[in-house]
Image: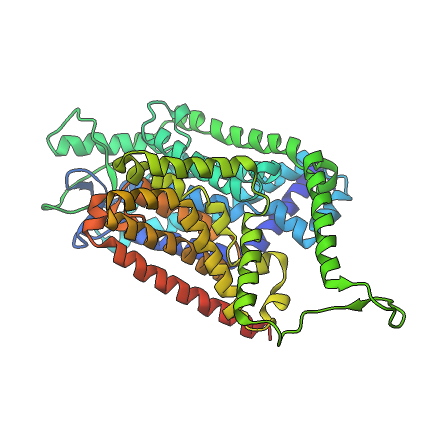
Length: 539
């Protein structure tokens, strides 16, 4: 079998397997819903890609370009997390060990996985193209459909972007340091940077998302209609409709072959990134590529596990062939409070396991800065940074049982809700309050009690969100994506409605603290319901 056939069958098998997942279906449905909201009717009271209450008529050029920009900008975030499990899945299912025994090269594997992920993302883009066509017909402002005006923005913006996303996903999976949660956070920061570069790019080579030609052309005509020709104002995502809606007939970008040739350099770059990933790919032989430090950690871990086993299995008088009598702590002789304390201690140890000294050093730095800096700097800068630092710790809450397949062991123990679930919740809350302790002390000293209450509520909300999303999804990815978006839009960029840490006076004056407390209560209830469902399902 030649390489092209191997590549084709790998792509086909990957595509068929991934399209059967709930995550793919959910991504498609959410994307279609966002497209529906992104093309609002004139009576909805808000606008998308508008400027000064001015937007284009919903013709093929406008709807196609608007949805293509949406796909390239926003779909590129969840798309990465959707496809960033190709190598992990092959390792988990044992397919990787079979592939390792074949003549398939590392280069062919990584490039093949990149293309299979690319095809999957193109399928979602295809759904968005159909959605854009449907929205043009539903809104009915312009009935005539011009296929090229609808299609070309997707070919220019979305297709190369999806190729880059697929390539970065396989690269992050191949580099050991970026394979897990840290890689998810790094990509989020990369995505933010690329988003800002693309929206302000003056040349296509600096516009990795391919959105600047559309946004610049829309903005120029909108400024002219609004009587501000030559203005630097740009069309924006979502804005409220304050005055009477003004529409104009935007005919789209004047696409040229040269523009597409320059844009599709990024497709070649994606193939190069996938080839680069082959240099780091372990070919399903993790032990061969493990560092000496990780091997040393494994030895220490083995010694620690042996010591823990020795605490449970104590040699005694020879009894039968085994010669060892197992000594277990009688359940009836253990007080519930003692059991909860022990479980809480173990949950904290598991949460903090593997953290390096420098991690604690930075956490301590945030604590000191929280006490010593002025009030405004603490509230607006230190608090947001403090509460993104332990995000990887929180992301593991509620997912350990599914990740390590210990459901039968944990959920069949005595009182799993009262002991393990409560201990896990308390452990996450303790981590939150310890990290924010410096800011809490600062706010208490100066008498900023509204900030104290907001911080206490926010620190309670975060573990609840992690626990609910972790238990119901079984994976840390959902919390990592959702929390980063929430943190970026709310506490970091000061949107009052999503500022769950009370970093601005506006969010405090609007009573956001009480909404956060209510949301936290709902999240813990949802998490408890999910855990009850897991417990009943394991018995």
